[in-house]
Image 1: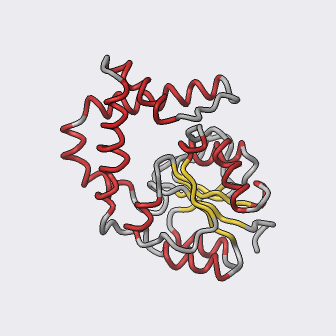
Image 2: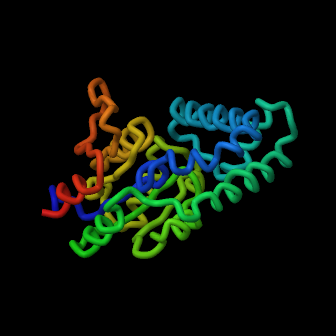
Length: 228
């Protein structure tokens, strides 16, 4: 195994499949629900800011709090909006994952990691179980977690530490793979994990802190990095 790593964990959206493949499918929905989606995104940024300013702040009823913040931005009642967010975004978006293709060599890499003895985990900011089923990769994981159910969005370290606990490994023994430097690399590093950043060839690395332990453009490169 490489550099004392015993487990490899992944983000989902934009990490195991290209974001553009989902975004193209979502265009009609985005145009129709632009006002709500804009407020929803702002609410999640507010929650991240709250938790950055107060790292001990966790939300046991995360979805309810998220709906209240979103409702305040839209000046509408929170309870009906919470149901609408669940139906339109959390449940509604899942159907868009049918037939979406993973990044090339993703399946081969996951299989090779497991055969080499690495534990594998997944941590997503949105509920991942149904998505994984549609993507055809719902089996073989040692842990599958949603950060929202841990009470904090990435890059808060809470969900990363919970992931390590479920995987049965010390954070320092886990390499976390993600496409977002701000959320995935920074969050995992704060939790004491090693990090790998899948990024576009056009994305600059300079000036980013903390820097990932490894950056790559495709899963063939990642395969060769991990499988000696």
